[in-house]
Image (cartoon, rainbow, N blue to C red):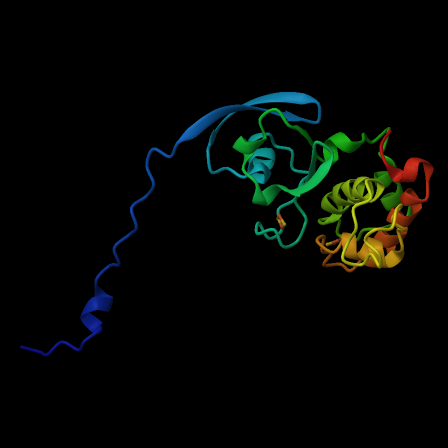
Length: 200
Ligand code: FES
Ligand code: FES
């Protein structure tokens, strides 16, 4: 009888498959996205990003890393920016969610959308919805006096929005095409405009 080599016999056997999850809990919820109410019934583990893209087909919000590293999925919740890949849809019932589709319309662009176009602040455009939503939320934070890592004196009000401040505050939004100089210029244009670039 041939001797079996340790390891070979084990390798010949099919690996045991992990049990497929069955009966994953779902939850009915209503999401307010871009001033429209949507009724959903989702697996409770569904991220807000997947709910937007896969359930509501609002594909303007992009999935880059799905790990909170790139900012492509940035949306606004109650006016504050958030990575939609890092939060669950079921946590946002009753919240006002704004995506790039709801920020402006082709015939009435939000000032930040218009500035990105005017400054040619994109190449492939994949990061752009997240950059724009993030920039809009960032200007609200500046207006509220929130300091950043680049603020020389955290007690200073109002915060002076230098290029260094903008770069630091937008550092969570990566652009693989390196359109950073034009993104910076677009944000600077809006920040120096009426109302510091904040929506009325
Ligand atoms: S997809 Fe959410 S941070 Fe990259
Ligand atoms: S424009 Fe291509 S990733 Fe930013």
